[in-house]
Every structure is written in C-alpha cells, then in structure tokens.
Image (cartoon, rainbow, N blue to C red; front, side, top):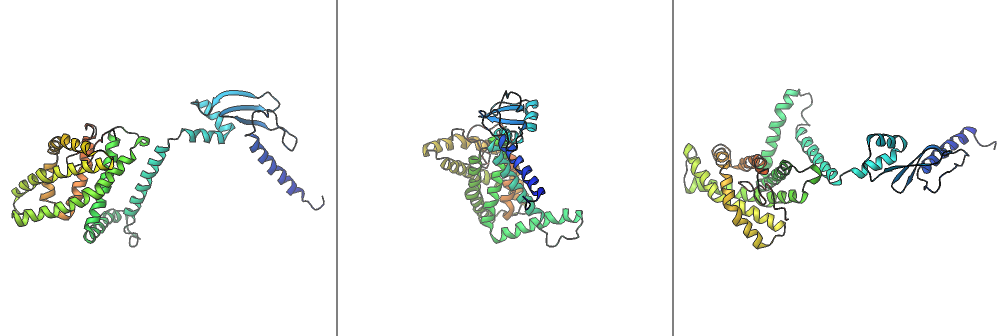
Length: 337
C-alpha cells in the first residue's frame, strides 16, 4: 500500500459514495434497506416505485409510502418536498406536464422573431459603428426599406410571393389568437395552408393584377391619374372583378389543400361569394382609395397585405366556418377539415 497516495484513496471513496447515493435513489422498492459498499446506510433517500414516490427519512426506520404520484396533481407543499428530496423526480414531473405543442409553437415563434429582428437590426452592421441611438432609429428603418425596394426591383414576382406568404401567415396566426386559441392549440396545418395560399396564389396573382390593371386604367380607359375622381372607377373595377376572383381562388386553393371534394369546394364558393363581397365593402373601398390614389404600383401588394392583417383580426371573432375576408385571408376555416 506504500505506493498508494492516501489522498487519492480518500477521493476515490468519496467519488464512489456519491455514485452509490445516486444509484440508491432508483433502487426497487423490494430493497427496503440497502447498505452501501462502505458500510453505512444512506439517509434522507427517495426510492421510486413505479410512478409512486416513497419517502424515507432514514434506512433505520420503516419505509414510509406516500400517496404522491407523478400522475397526480401535486400540491405546493408536495412540489417543494419533491424538489428538496428528489430534484430529478421534480424535473420529470415538470416535463410530464409540458404541452409539447405549446413548446413547438413557442419555439417556432421565438425563432422566427429572433431571426427577423436580428436581420432588421443588423442591416447597417458594417457602417453603424459610432452611431448614436437617434441615428440608428432613423437610419435602420430607412435602410431596411431601401433594401426591400432593391430586392423588389430585382425580383418583383418572388419578392411579392414571399411578402404575401409572410403576411398571410401572420394574419392567420392573429386570427386564431383572436378566436381564443391557446398557444398549444394553434392549428399549424391551417397556418401552413395560409402560407402556401399567399406564396403560390395571392402574391403572384396580385403582381399580375396590379400591373394589368395599371395598363387598363392608363392605356385603355385613359384615366388621368392627376384627376382625383379617377380613383372611383378604379376601386369599382377592383371590387367587381379582382376581389371576387381572388376570394373564390382562395377558397379553391384551401379546399384542394384540405383535399375536399370538388363538389364541396363549389358549394363553398356559391355560399360565400355574395357574403364576401358585402363584407369587403365595409373596408376595402376606403383602403383602395389609398391603393390606387397614393401607393405606387410596385408597392400596392405590400399595402394591401398590411391592411389584410388588420381586416382578418377584425373579422376573426365574428366569422362563420369557411368565411374569409374581403380579399380572401381566411378568418376561420371549416372545422371539418
């Protein structure tokens, strides 16, 4: 034994004592008294017996079983006792109470929010050293807008598609929140359908419509943009043609993505066409005075999408199954899907 360092032996003993104490907590209930390798019984231990917590103040005493179970709702005192005696059991109890859907939805929301805010805040990261807070507050929004405009000029169709997909996703999330849906009950497939409807439907089709309508107004009807009254026929044409067309296209897209029958989709189109036109008249004529009177043609889709977020939030609580907003953003889908 001369070659062994007494300090190393003492450390090894302490190490094995800690390991034994940890293992002792998971000893089956049949081992009512277990002596560790160093000859002393462990005290203040917790023995787990098949989803039940068994508290023992000392192995010299008879093991006392409690009525606490991981499957039960624990009181505050029981939770505190569990935390002190068995931190691992306390953690397991907390994990079992977690709503996995709430965790997933929260993680997605936080991840997207952090990514977007990080991108927006660092747009001037290469040149903003030494800027004051007021300079950043002025320059960052302007430079983000300039970046968006440059991307829009370079790739107008794809930029508008992504813009609509983003806005439709936000609008559907707000709609579900306005309906009283909790974070763990958010319908992710419904949000995905709205995202796809904006990406492959509203964005590209709106790009075509606003360019074509501008040609119609300027070159065919020869409406003078400098005359205030020309906004009236523009809004009327929009509400009589594009509005109903997109509403029905949106219903068709959602129905196909939900794998509804063509007859069911056709019945939904017939049921909602007139009500959607009437609902749209509550806001869209006023919004389109700005659309066709003030907003440049390349930014009209962005303006309309922003209005739709407000519109879908207003209508969410009052909407019936399958109804959507005046320009098609779903307020509440048919629950049979």
